[in-house]
Image (cartoon, rainbow, N blue to C red):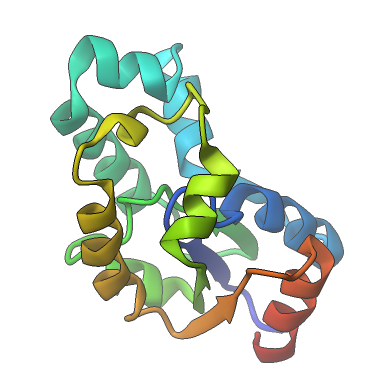
Length: 162
C-alpha cells in the first residue's frame, strides 16, 4: 500500500471514529479524528463550541483543520459529518481513498438517540440534513453499508478495496 490517507465520511452515528480506530490499528497507521483535533485545539467539546460560538464558527474550524492536513503519509482520518463538502471533498480525494460509511436515517436515530455530545440532534430538519449530506457522501470513492455489520466486518470491507 502506498503512502496515503484513508478518509472515512458519513453522517453522525455511522461509525467513523470507531471504525477508524480499528482500521488504523489493523493497518498500523496513525488515526486522526477532525472533531477530536478541533476539541484539542479549542480546549472545549464540539457541543460547547456549537453552544458558545455557533455552528458557522465550528464549520470554519472544521474546514481549516481538514485543509491543513498534510498531503503525505499513511493515516486514517475520520471527518465530521459536515466536513466532506464542495471545498474539502476534492482535497480529501487527492489524499487517498474516501469511504462513505452508509446507513439509514432510522439507524442513525437508534445509534445516537439522546447523545448530548451531538448538537445537531436538535435540528428540526435532521432528516433533510441527512439527505443533503448523503448527496455529498455519494461522491466518496467507496461506500460500505454498515447496518448489520460488526466493526470488524466494516473494516474488512474497507481493507478489500484500499
